Length: 214
Image 1 (cartoon, helix red, strand yellow):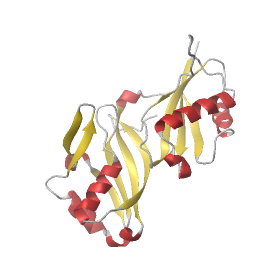
Image 2 (cartoon, one colour; image 1 turned 60 degrees about the vertical axis):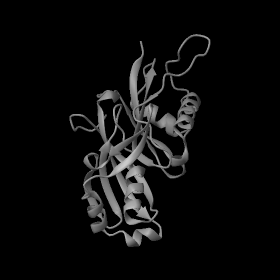
Image 3 (spheres, helix red, strand yellow; image 1 turned 45 degrees about the vertical axis):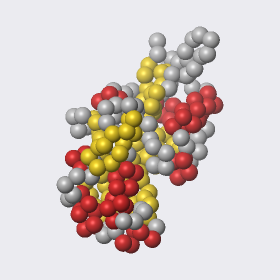
């Protein structure tokens, strides 16, 4: 009998440049090196059951990522965490392992901390971002499975806090609609007439009922 376990981890520093596909491979190798009793499929091409809740865009850090595995032997959550951390780098570290409470289909929004960096940071006071959000519409071209579509970001952006060069936003996330915070910063730069650089960290993921995804 297998048991489903959700593993929460952070992806920071140089690890933010690891693509989602490479991250999957990295975690598969880590699970093998840690010698964890994970469920493996049968057949000609056996593979570890490994599924990520909300893939992260390249170049964005996170302190709230997660994936699920199936464990086939009795092992503590702390041991799963410690064994994986023993074979991972400091930029990829497990925060905790636990039995999941929510399904990934319940994910509705994600919180991002955005810091404007570089020379442009000095020219972006709080008032400018407020003016940016006060526009009648903030239209971007978004790629979809069917091609390209025009999307108005204005009703989708929820400003939580703003302090000097740090902006905290709540954006749609999940299986139905995702807004990449890089698109928001790109639009903000276009509004200012400059090319902005930003350090972005996903800090929380929330379900449709407003509760934290765990």
